[in-house]
Image 1 (spheres, rainbow, N blue to C red):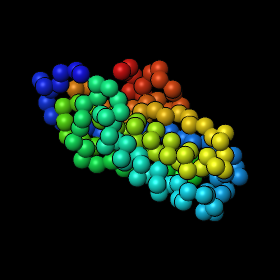
Image 2 (cartoon, rainbow, N blue to C red):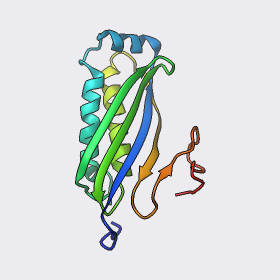
Image 3 (cartoon, rainbow, N blue to C red):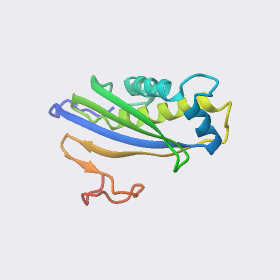
Image 4 (tube, rainbow, N blue to C red):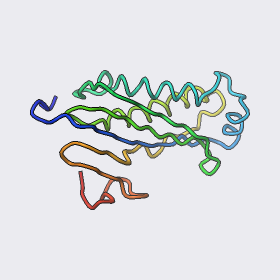
Length: 158
């Protein structure tokens, strides 16, 4: 683990996003409430929050953080077709909260997959990425729109 003992505690925020692409019929079943395991969006939201809280148990060398909040939003999107997920994690700490936001999105989408796999095994997780982080020594970082991981919107690389 990296020694963060000399760093100042600051408020840190991270936002991550991702999507679960599925067949149009699967999205229709989801919207109509015809899914065998219950409401995938509600269960995936809770799973994403729980995933953020357990990040240090899942990711080796990741610091355990006293999260002050985690918000996970899942929305059906006909344009995919599928589900878009967005997680915002907040903490006052000596290290960032990016991994918690990313884990929240990944766990939420994996949970939705699990709940819908009886309907559609061909679903695909896509685009899980950090879109914004605030706080700490490096300040604010924002991903360039549509960029996968090269240059950031504010011109810096991290």
